[in-house]
Image 1 (cartoon, rainbow, N blue to C red):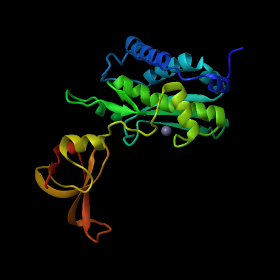
Image 2 (cartoon, rainbow, N blue to C red; image 1 turned 45 degrees about the vertical axis):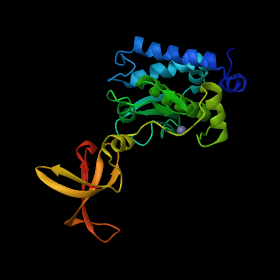
Image 3 (cartoon, helix red, strand yellow; image 1 turned 180 degrees about the vertical axis):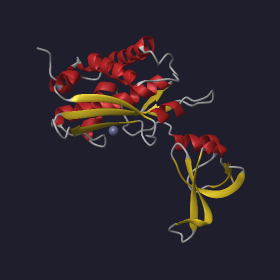
Amino acid sequence: MSPTLIEIIQSKNYDIIHSKAEVQEIHRHLIDSSNYVNAPNFTKIHPSDLELIFDEYDRRFFDGAIRASLGDSSLNFRLSKRMTSSGGSTRQWRDRYTRNQKFEITISAPILFESFDGPNHRDIIANGIVCHDRVEALQRIMEHEIIHLVEFLAFNESSCSRKRFHSLAKQFFGHTFHKHQLITPAETAKVKHGIMAGKKVRFEFEGEIFHGIVNRITKRATVLVESPEGQKYSDGRKYVKYYIPPAILEPLE
Ligand SMILES: [Zn+2]
């Protein structure tokens, strides 16, 4: 009989040489066999690519025990265009009718594509490990989400702020840090354009020039422009909201 997920968790020790070799094999395998990801800094990706690397991780690090312990539960992979504050997420819930367990791993497309963008990109650090290209960044995010899934399956709950998660992430992948340290669109806006929340900016919109204050940045910056037709804010003034690409904002100070 093949070992269960719990047995694997309890028996496996981190072996840096072995782990690094497997991770490199997965990197190579994805580029070789994907119909979309064709380079380390790929420009196209499909949810099937997420499943492809997940299955490689399951096979090489867990002897296929993650799939095996899913049983009747479904596992879905999704790429999100809107997730910008973190690299990925893992969700567990029960189907309303069948009561079957469902799992979903979501990876942020904007975070991947904002990273390693252009010739002056900098390496990013994820989970305490330096990533040199987009596939490596995707792998770090997937490794983190795999530990969430393993915890859900083995213990029915998961939290990456707890000790158990940290020791599992270290034991399998050598992770030493457990926050999303990938460069985010907000960070890009700041690095490339000096734009951040609270900054006074000028921008052109439909031929007119506006002055405003950056309120928040996701894929676009939310800029508040004072106007009598606007909505009242906590400072007592009225503002109209504009959603503007950070690249066309001009800092005013
Ligand atoms: Zn997490």
